Structures are given as structure tokens and as C-alpha cells.
Image (cartoon, rainbow, N blue to C red; front, side):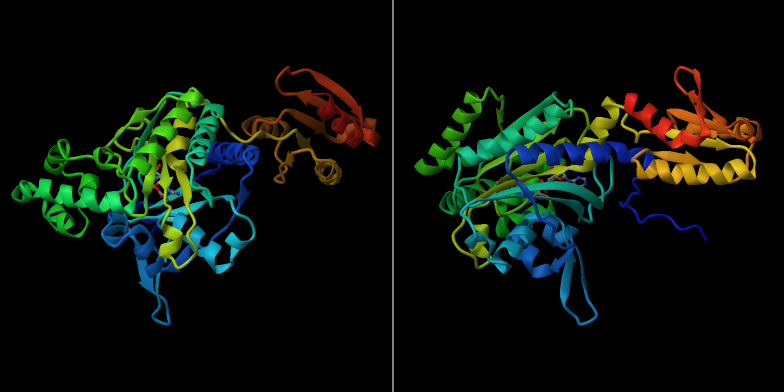
Length: 420
Ligand code: HAM
């Protein structure tokens, strides 16, 4: 019996980790420039938190959540996203009392039972960012420029920023009524799911992937036509600030996003390089969620980057493997091996990346091993070298060789690394 990873769950192998690290390290660096702090939240939450936060009628809650009862019969879910958990943590720990605006990020796996395909997994990873406590629109623009700065510093420039506004709850109420009226004329042509959505939450018909429903929604009324004066003002300021910063955008009135908590600004960063799964990041404002969870009236905005999708773009753009050892110690014979083993530990304490092999292979095999590991240098020590008290250091790129005294080998090798 050969075990395999569960469908939609993937291993990230050592050769692939370089791109992930690059993305996460660059994200942390850029977020630091904007004053964000890390928060870490659990993978399991009560099912109720997501049902309430994301919305019962969304695909995520109604079809895609990994939910189960624990041994005591409590209903729990593996998080499909991070926003609801972060707000739960803010309320639970009274963090909002500490200052008026909080900027946080978290990085980790999310779980959605979707049909796996390129750029879509059942376990996927997000870099999630939230500003809690500011009504915008400047914070909306700050957040969007931060994400674009991150992508640009990763060398990803061929991207499109799509923006929309979903208005306030009053606007949404009116929109829902208009949308229902529009959809009534098409009831018999809608898919069975959308016929139900039409009654429970007509906005979610925009998420449907059935061709006929997509066609019907092309002429549907849009939220932008119905925005109240205040929400129109917010959206206009957002566009003006984006223009001030020289950022290009596309107004996309069909950008509904798949979660119910959004108000006003929503946005996505899209690429043409990944086929159907074109959104590499998405987010928006959710000014009422904190109150819906029983907390104080606190506006907020955030986004999440889909790491798998960005890594796929990075892999096409750069070779990002881990660096090889600074020195590989090729020892021939037991005595040389014992000495090299001690030198290797000394060198590691001095901060050098070191490797040797323990199988007593011949010199040729050891050199091949060093080459495979991409070692920068190899220290060669056999019986002859021990007798003379002199080792040989070979530079693997120039193939040049230097002699080193075995009495001071650790100092000399460490100095070579410092000079290079
Ligand atoms: P979302 O649009 O559901 O938003 O997910 C954000 C990003 O996660 C997507 O744009 C996509 O890149 C990635 N993603 C989503 N599902 C999958 C999947 N099955 N496989 C691979 N990647 C995927 C949210 O999750 C919101 N919580 C974002 C947010 C934060 N809004 C406000 N604050």
C-alpha cells in the first residue's frame, strides 16, 4: 500500500521552498516599511464564526468548508480564510482598546473544498493583511499601494488592479431588490443553485461559474449605479488618491468578491498568466464585521495574497534555490574524517554553511556530491595531507586550488568566506 497526499493537498518540496521564502521574506520586509505587526491565529475555529462572518449563502460556507464535530460534539471548521479569526482575536483580547488603528498580517494555510486545478487547491496559503480602525479612503490606498510595491519588488509588474465599491448596507439592500427584480425575468434560465441564490442572496449569482448564468449577469444592474452620496464620495476619493500616486486601475463593477462581509471598497490584483485563476490577491473594506461579531463599531479593510499563485509566477521569473554550502569537507580515510568532522562543527559555529559525507566514499564521488549540493569550495584532506599538515581548498567555480595549514584550517577557511 503506497500512501499519497490527499487530493488538493500538496507537498512543497525542498527545491520549491526558495520561491516561498522569497515571497514571505519580501512581504515581511515591505510590511515593516508600512508599520505592520504579525499576528498568529489558530487553524480551527467554531463553524459559527465563519458562517456568521463570511455568510451562510456564500459558496465558501455552504459548500467548501472543512467542518466536523470534535470529540465533545462541538462544531468546528478548518479556517477557509483569516479575516474572521483576526477580528475574533481582536474582540477576545480587547486589542481595539490599546490604540485606535491596528495594522496586522498573518501567513499560513487555509482550507476550502474546491475542485482542485492549476492555481486552486484545497489546502492553500495566504498572506493576509488587515488595517483595523480606520474608515479610509487613504488607508484603502495605502493598503493597495503596499501590495503593488510588494509585487513590483518581486519583479511582478504585468498585473492589473481591479476596483469596485459594494456600498453601505442600505445601498446593498436596494441593490438586492433591483437585482432580484432583474433576475425574475430569467428564473427559468438560471442554474438550480442560482434560482436558490436569487431568493437567499442574489449578489452571489455574480459568483456562479455556469456559462448561462455568467451570460445573464453581463447585463445585470451594477452596484455603482446605486451608491449613496457618501459611498460615491468614498469611491471617488479612492480613485483620486490612486491617480495621485500614479497607480493604474480598472473599475470593475462586476467584482463582487465571494464573501458577504464587504462594504464599500473591494479590489483584486489579477494576472493574465495563470488562466482561469487570475486573482493573485483580493480584498476590501468590511466596516460592519466587528459589530456583527459583538465588538465596537470599528471600520476595517484588508486583503489576502494567494501564495501558490504568486509562487507560480515567481518560478517562471527566477531561479530561487537555497544557497549551497560555503565549504564541503572531502575527507579520505578515518583519521582525516574524524578531524574534518570537528573542523566542520567549528566552522558552523562561525556561521559557515558546511557539509561532509559519512560513507567513506572516494574523492571522485565526494566531489560529485559537493557539485550536486552546489558547494562554493571543497577542503580536501587525505593521509598525505595529514602527514604534511597541509590541506587543499578547491574553488568550485574557478577550479583554482589553494593550500591551507591544517593547524589553522578553521581560521583560514572562515577568512576565505569573509573575503568572497
Ligand atoms: P479571497 O478572495 O477568498 O479573499 O482569497 C484571497 C486570495 O487567496 C485569492 O485572490 C487567491 O489568490 C487565493 N485563493 C483563494 N482560494 C484559493 C484556492 N482554493 N487555492 C489557491 N489560492 C486560493 C479572502 O480570503 C479574504 N479573507 C481577503 C481579505 C482579507 N479581505 C479582507 N481582508
